[in-house]
Structure formats: structure tokens, C-alpha cells
Image 1 (cartoon, one colour):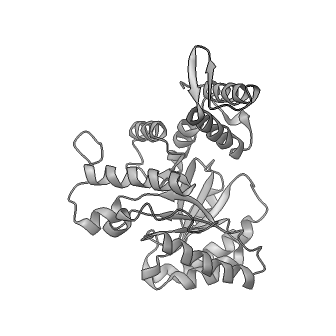
Image 2 (cartoon, rainbow, N blue to C red):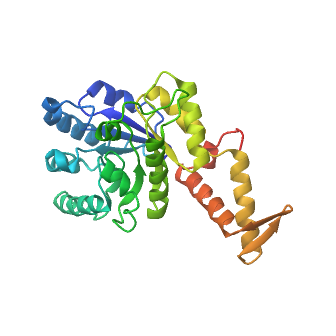
Length: 301
């Protein structure tokens, strides 16, 4: 799940166009990109889109970003869209792992009502949109078996804390936002969830997007959210492990297996221990999740 593309839930035109993108995940949005007066129509349009997409493009998952718990709109969102069986629900403004647990309980009820296998609907959450939420990023471990991914957000956090600027002059995030980003990465890994980097809002600046993607990959993020289809190819390219990295990971896993899975092995003059093995296994699992090693590309490791 490298690329997560937001699509406004009230735009039939943009929803139809989104099916032609190569995004791994379509995030049909009922929250920030939909005006309050359009929420009801957005639910209906999103539900029909989900029903019309059933059985098509199995490599592309369709998720729905619902409104937050404190909006008073969440239950209406779930009632409408769960009948259309989305792959997952993205919860915005999650304050702690308890919110994910609570959402999981609600999904269980809606799955029963709509004859969906219990636990089939996955959960992702954006976990840094308030100061309180950012301080609770370590609370997601064991909160729900449905939890798949955790992401961070800068826009709402900026408003919550009253920050005048999110980035420094050189384009890097200011300290408080780097903290939120770092804590999301650590919180996701601790919870066994996929860490997803936030959107890059300057959607015409693909060079800037590439630099931010490369930094995210180096730090350990597995994917990134997108706000425009033009961002998807860059995200997919950068977040796809290189052929060389995949080959090296296979060699490492094979070497440990042949040695009887000891704590440490010697390989090509280098001492490798269990963390090296775990990183290799994680990379290979990422490739398997893409469907085929044919999706790898020849780029620098």
C-alpha cells in the first residue's frame, strides 16, 4: 500500500477518474473535502461508487474516510457506506487507541447488519491532528485486530496548536511537526501497523514530492497519502523497493535459513543479526503485498 489517493466523495467525475489511476488505495473522502451541506449527497454518491466498483480492479483497494467521532456525522457515514462493503475505513482525528477500538465495535455491528464477514473491514487512522492525539501515538498497540495503517497529518495539528508556519524556509518541517511524524512512525511500528506519510500539498511540485518520499522511505515509512492523481506515479516509484534491495533481502533470508536461523551470521564479510533478518523479511512482505515482484523497478538501493 504505497499510494493512498484522496478523492472527494461528492464528485462523481473525480471518482470515475480515480479508477484510471495506479493508486494502491483510493480514499473516498467524506470529511475535509466535502462541505457540510454536501455530506448527505456525498454518502449516497460514495455508496453507489463502491457498489459499482465491486469486483473490478482487485489490485486497487477502496477505503472511505469518514467524519470524526466529535463531528456527530460518523454513524450516518457508516450506515450508508458499510452497506456497500468498502475494504476499510480511515478514521480522522483519532485521539488514542481507544477511538480505534470504539470504531471496531461499531464496524462489527454494521458488518452483522450487512452480512459482511466479521472483521473483514479494515481500519486506518490519522493520529496527530490535535495536540492530545500527538501525545497519544503510542497507545495503538493491541487496540484492534482490524488496524492496518497509521498516518499523520499536519494541517489540523497546525490549527489546533496555533502554529503560523509548518515548514522552515528550506521546506523541511518545523520541530513540532517532525515530532508528530516521528511519533507516528514509532507508534505504527509498535502497533504492527503500516506507517503512512502525510500528504504533500504542493501537488504541482513533483520534485519536492520526490524528495519528501525519498526521506520517508529512508526513515521507514511504507507509503504516502496523495491529494492529486499526478502524485501517484512518483509515490509508487519511490516506495517500490529496488530490484537490488529485493535480491539482497532474499539472500539474507536464505542465508539465515541455511544456517539454521541463528542469532548472527556472516555474509559477504559482514556480520548480520536478527534486526537485519527482520528488515529483509519486512521488505519481502511488502513486495508480496504488491502482488508480484514484477512491480519492482531498477533504481538506487
